[in-house]
Length: 222
Image 1 (tube, rainbow, N blue to C red):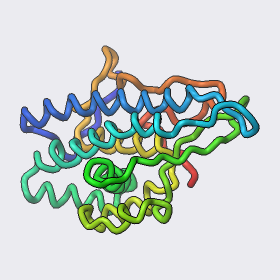
Image 2 (cartoon, rainbow, N blue to C red):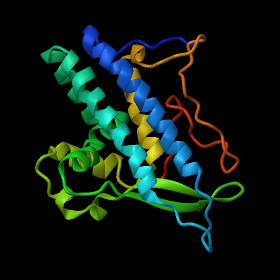
Image 3 (cartoon, rainbow, N blue to C red):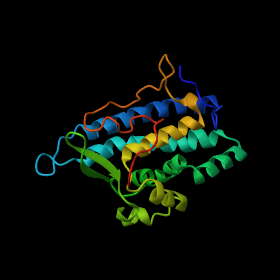
């Protein structure tokens, strides 16, 4: 049985913990849907339907909302003031924490700005066929009203530039899930053996070695 790691920021408040259980369950499901939606496209560089990035954006949006709730309402606000300070300091330096902070930018834009959530799609050759890889738009390619938005803290703009923009969407979502696991492993749903439910993600023939589990290291080139 897998051993459960020590929680960095245990969520002791029962109501926030219950909310965290629900949002982590939702995040796992949304990650699965993003993965399956991208995998469902059959395309080529020469013919066939081009990938509909809106379908992917529709699956990503609730994942961003769950991540923000876990970040703010579940983990951070469950801590005493000194714990909240430590949590923010961890996000300053931790690669996965930077991803969580950077994802605040597209989440806020999707909820608060007149800007559609736009996901860039690459068409790459896997081991046996062409496949679609959703990536976040580089910061410079975001609409101006997102880049100039003062409703999102400058630290989230910077984190998006450094840790999100240009990276594979699925990798950032797995990184966010892994970050909250480190904060409080008890928030995740597990099976009878203690293994995480919903992971690893389904293997496809185009690249069986691709990252499919939050515990695996980030493999995403920019």
